[in-house]
Length: 430
Length: 119
Image (cartoon, rainbow over all chains, first blue to last red):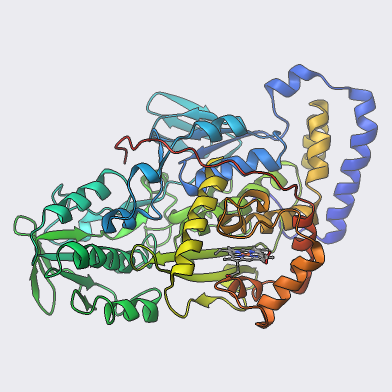
């Protein structure tokens, strides 16, 4: 940490006072050389790696809240933004991939972002240099928002990706592939899904997916089954709510099996063996164990269990390199890896970087909201929602008073969940 | 000392810097940052794209009344009670002032584009 987050109030005040007096007096002496402003923004250059919910939000708010005084360059390999939230609805049949696909053009223009469509090869935190496949960049501060990577080495029998067995855990071609497999599956077939142990993107996502596939089966293939093989001891999110669906509307379709880690997987026949049974699937969806995005791993920043990145929740600076900030799904935190969470972290990080670059202490007690809606069919949804506050003693974000889940899924919340999507897409992409 | 040097150098670089200092007044930015985490549901600067209420330019007292109602359960809500209960009375007052000061405008819509087969 180069900044002093524990600066006393008096020190803060005097620093600000100093800044103001110099500023107003100083301008009269210095005037304003316009060329200097154009060529060297006063607060420096931030490079953001990854333009998902976290990275794109950080870039936008860095520009907006610094009033253009920070230069921001984004490095993103993909040509367009694809929303993972709501991609389970593509499997259920109530959304199309087109509806979840967006152009980056407006956000680039609105915020005057420098944009490089490329992949990162190495990061050199000592010289503050990022090497890309086609060039290199120097930064004052770096933000990594690479999302998750998949760890196939932990799947006995499928130690590398198999085309016929999609994860569909990053929205895109994979989502369409899984949808096509469900469409061509005969009625009376079995869809099996495996859920990994440990932290993964979107805790309620697998259970929402089970509901979406069951919804599709109910309408088109009513004799078919959904078998959930969960490596965890129990449903990890919105348990009571999902049980209402598993034991209610989908009781003849969904079977939930806990403690069902994959002991052996036979990819050709799509057979999964667990401690309790052997399941042969017509369509097999393996959600792989997860860890921080490759860029973060390669830079040695995945320093918690060699999987996730430890950060300071005041600034999102990596505990390994104070000028490298990490936000979103890659970080180690007792927080759900959700899109709203990623954007909330991005905003705290952006505000902190502006303060640090201006020589001021960042807000020592950040607060933010998180909500995650899940759809149980094409209309009804339910939430988990919390406010989180920084706890300086625990050095982590902890759930504030209140917070919790819906009493039941409803179409009123389905409408609000659609509004959430429209609004978070607008906030992130405009 | 580094800070002063840095700021001194920044000063040479122009007026926009003076404006940014103003914007960074610490408590104001703390509220702006907190308010920004409401945008996921209520839209950028509280201008909702529909479905949820717009918060921009809401009357301050009305805002506080609604939030306190969510907090104590006297106003029924699908989700706002979860958020309101997590906020302090001071935060609610600051958020009320923030949103009251935001202009009401038609928010931009995220630009849809045909799926190109990425990822």
